[in-house]
Image 1 (cartoon, rainbow, N blue to C red):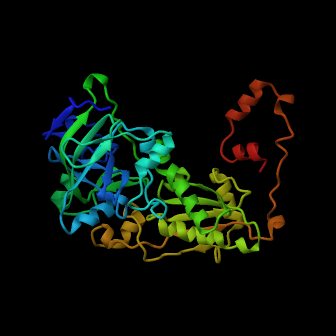
Image 2 (image 1 turned 180 degrees about the vertical axis):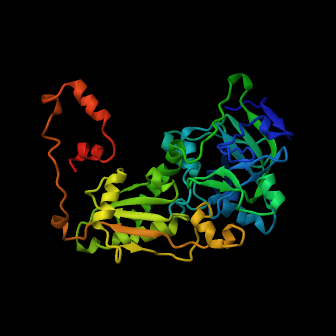
Image 3 (image 1 turned 90 degrees about the vertical axis):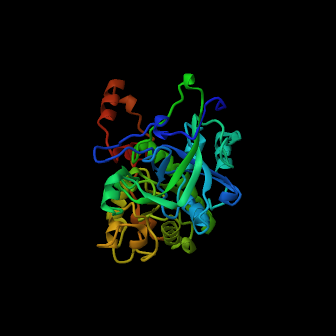
Length: 410
């Protein structure tokens, strides 16, 4: 547990205790992106919220606090925006892994709405309650087992530019900044600010670990998709149980950008539910631009299998859906930013193209017409014909679809 002696009240420069980094050579300034916010109690409608927000402490103990439009923190900030009330909260570093997992659970709010208990869910994941502790300088609770915690207030209406370059130009959404989950360079905006009142930490001699999270890395992808896959599966189950078999978010779908829903049609009346699932996923997950439905004979973890499926099973006239044009998307996608035209590339100026749902399933009743050849891989033992060295050599040359072939025979 964090030691009370490791308390620095009203720090002059928060970056002295952080690990601000540049991810790329394109960024003009350093950012802190691995902190996990903790909002509890009345400010989250009685529940608890964990999530990521990039920060740039340009003013010593005051930093920009970027909030993704539509996110839980966006909902909290909107709640207090008109009254201009500062929001007491913390940013935590070096937290229990289950808390890291929940922090990536963004834009699944049909299943995890405002007021849910994300810290409680993290406790269920790790099999023991997450320990909480009262903050020293703000009226809030935070994670007791964090290596380091920033206490303070988010001021929703004290909005400042994230970089000097953007501020000097007086323009939002044009200049490069911190990379984002979509796989592109982020842009600098005017963001709310986080005013730090204290830094609490373990004793320095214990050498606390501050993890500088890389964006759009495989580590980041695992954090951002594990709970989202489960939540999207649960969404399908709530609509109609028993049809969805799996939900996968491959790396190429960029965390919040898409998903693959595997279904099994049990009878004729199940036909069509896959399209309901696609529309629901695109509607309920703000920023999702591509959802694909596949049948149970497809390996949803193999992009080679998915591309084969799109090539051979999709009718472009009837199987490609555009369910919510004019809805709300995410400005982190360049294609959506461009809809603002000559206006500033901010959320209020962009339009969502409506997303794309692709029904790549086998029509019910036509299974024999879409029957895939299955090689009897379970009946052939390679060791009967090849040496261990030969087999290892062959496996070292395997790439892509052949992994699915070796595992399933398809």
